Image 1 (cartoon, rainbow, N blue to C red):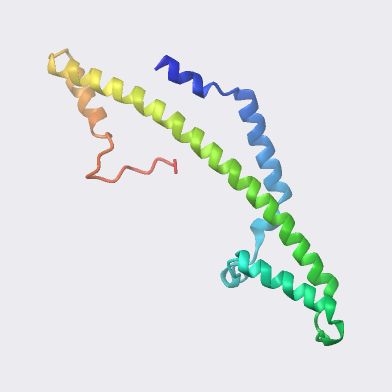
Image 2: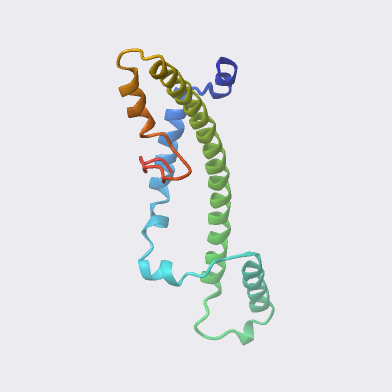
Length: 158
């Protein structure tokens, strides 16, 4: 277990600092989290085809300005599309961070599980050898052992 532990040598100061920066970024982007519910419900999922359609619409609007309806404000349209690209860039970066953090979280969780299973197995052996108090502690720990038959209790970790 010691050799595997080296993969988890995380500088806690850096991790704490990263957490603060993420909180700071969330504060800067708080407008993203305050969309009215109705706006979220009706928002279309944007994909590559949708982006291409929007880009073509802007190109056509520039090429044929005399065909624009009076309600269409090209400055607003361009500004919205520019903002879309900036938001997309942030989304890509945050998705990458999330994937890397989840990978490290799972690695760390597996190390913890490995240690917990070592304790469980040790208690199981102690229980079989009738070491005083071991059976009660073993059964207590066994009751929380994850199994494929029963769903694990949600303890706040996703």
